[in-house]
Amino acid sequence: MIPPRHDAGQAFPIYITVVAGLLFLALAYLAVGQAAVNRSGAQTAADAAALAAAQQTRDQLAGMWVDDVRDPAKWQAIFDGAGAADSCWRADQLAAQNDATARCTFDAPLRYVVDARTNKPVGDSVVPGTENTHSTAHATAVIEPLCTFRPPGEEAEKAELPSLTCADDKVWQVEPDDSTGLPRPEDLFDVHLADSPANDR
Image 1 (tube, one colour):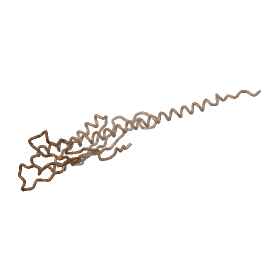
Image 2 (cartoon, one colour):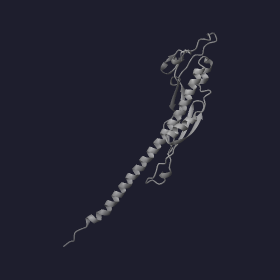
Image 3 (tube, rainbow, N blue to C red):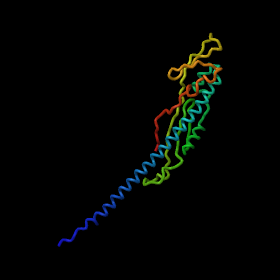
Image 4 (cartoon, rainbow, N blue to C red):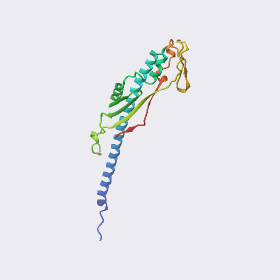
């Protein structure tokens, strides 16, 4: 009589190996997800920091234009960014709000470059070294003048001010005595990211 085969006993080690492999794959996918979330946080911090600094400078330039609205000889210099102050402190603030640190460069007059680094590392995972790995990201924000004007001729009366032609061909008839009718900062300047997100790791 032939003794029964112990197939179940032979299959058990294979089963354990397969389960262990699947578990490892699951942990590896989790590690990839952790890293992706960390990198996304770094990019969000970099984008927000660069935009915040640029918007601060945009608002400053718009305020300068309002102060000199009666002197159109100064307008072009303001639209070109002359006199803009470094607003990298706003980049630091926004990066901190996104749990990151920022290295900001004011590429005067109308550009900010920010490199952000997450405060928290990716964390423990099956991938060696991730517990001490911090994600970094890069962003550049640009301030773009939206308006053009024709400087008044020498024969024009001093009381006359040129009109502004801005985005979508909107024409502003500048009336200094009516502050509510003057263009807003976002009417005078556009702020946008200049390049696509690019994480370092």
